[in-house]
Length: 634
Image (cartoon, rainbow, N blue to C red; front, side):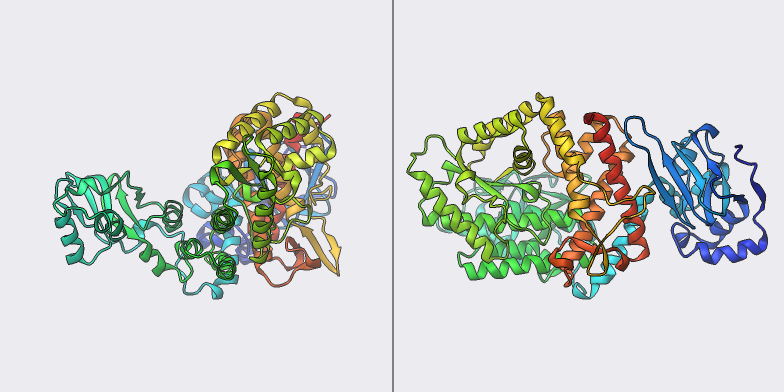
């Protein structure tokens, strides 16, 4: 049918008055100025569609209107060659034909009225005009799921705000902080002159610069003891002889989170700050301490500074408290899981160092491997252990028992710190997972060549691996083998895809969320029915294309490029993954656990924004699965 045949009349003044308040309860209108909402309403026409009547279809060509459902429901059916027909249901208040209207192309979905349906038809030309004058409307049209995610983060931040009231956000720009003016000196000045300046200015560091622009090095109070006092160095020595070269720096646009990560990873306490290459300030570990009662550097320093298990247990508790505070600040899931994973890494490495020394193990003879979510740097609050150990082929057979005893003590210590023993025994203390480099290569080969159900499960766990402590060179041949062999074995990739497609996204035929009832609550498992599917698909494509990235976000971006899909599409996969991760984190930090599962939520307890974006996110998960189905199933 022609698009305009059902138009009955332009929106009347009374209709504008009645609808304005209703529309401004939801996105994007709740963020728009009243004059812009009125522009939308007065430029719209109203149309009636009878039950089962087609509103818009691919045969109609590029849409002339943006459709807003005022009353009734609309079903959308999408027929994608190669997979079964999919459908979804839109309720009153929903907008459709956004992407096609913007791109001036036919829709790929047939929209039909489910019951008596009234729609506002907003002309495409008016849509473009409104987008140019209303930023909230433009942002919504360009990335609806992102707009919803921003709303969700605000609601989540408010929910946890009381637990993080005194905390400064780690998302603050370094340039927005009260930066100190750095103390500088030339490279040919003497050590005596530098130390005199440090003492006079009462600062913790001095930068060695050339022409007041190029940073050559840094000297801190902590360097003085080891490099000057204990070395009995002559104070006439040029400062360039004792400075630390290759100074790590930040820009004014970097975040406090980045400052904390650099300090923690490189064991440094001062970072110069640049603005378009010019030195404008310096930020210290103490400055970050003032931002956070529990800081990244504070916790990691406490971990590295103790060999007492009871103290490390307290540090593990601090990690979880720190995560809750960050969630209360509205920190994104990507940043939060990166920070959690980093601190968990620091704690695990410290335990490995303690017990390796106890067993007199040379750290160059083995590598402790992080697997699964820890391997991907995506750990959430509720996480058990997934680890393994690889040791040198040259180690004597008698050393195997020593490695097993060592691994057992590390696994038990992690358990006491709140990281439960893996129920599937995916731990380095398992003799099956404490192997030489050659033995691991044989095992990887068998998993790829045979591809039985257990092999596929093992591959899904073990092929997301990275070295956590020990000798990283032991992993190089393992990584090279997986990257090249998996991509050259199409049968293995297909079996992995078939296995992944057995997991169903909890959406019904109409695209509505299909929950499972537990104790009278309507629930979904955000991990098994959401994030795990995305992780699976990302892993499979990465193996197929030989992509080296391990982190899911990085994999999805690389996969988008490999598949040549629009960047907005791969960005929507990433956004959906991060939203589901955020919901998981909120559920895990909350006190109630449905059925004892920290990843299960009651969808009826979600606010209206989160319910909307959850549906959008799950739709993106299903879309990603459909890509996999088209490429590898059948």
